[in-house]
Image 1 (cartoon, helix red, strand yellow):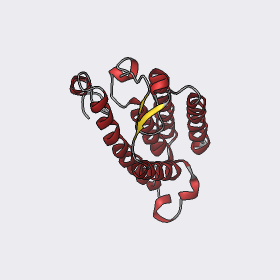
Image 2 (image 1 turned 45 degrees about the horizontal axis):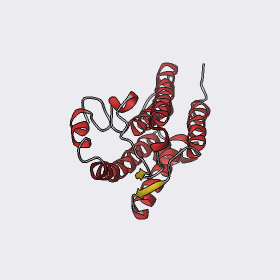
Image 3 (image 1 turned 90 degrees about the vertical axis):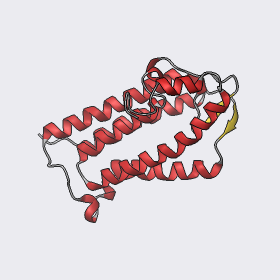
Length: 190
């Protein structure tokens, strides 16, 4: 049995994108946001990372060489992690509701969400997206995936830096204790 991993990854990520597009209509007005320069760096790295993982067009030269053997069990495990990561990111997007912004922002009437996936990690959307990207990288099994995953991780680290600063400024009484209790991306570790 050979799976079309690229197609399944595309379906998962397109579904995730659909939730994001619908969610844009229900966000609060932005009061403060990360500078445009940081946003551009984040977006370029993120889009390039997603494209490298999800598009077979990047299967050129050494980027197209497999580092994981092609086996159905490995592809299925990778695709399961891709879907689980997407579902976790969707859950986080729904939990943050109208406080969400496509860039690091403070919204009018911003609330510090600490329930649901935000009780597990402070940046669960990124956790879900990175888990999904890791799963897709495993399913595809090519070096392009690892490079794409590294670019995405760096992009999220850039954005987290801005988000953390904004949350500390906006919630100086509660964010430090939340930050001390709940790890940024990986429960119990980081």
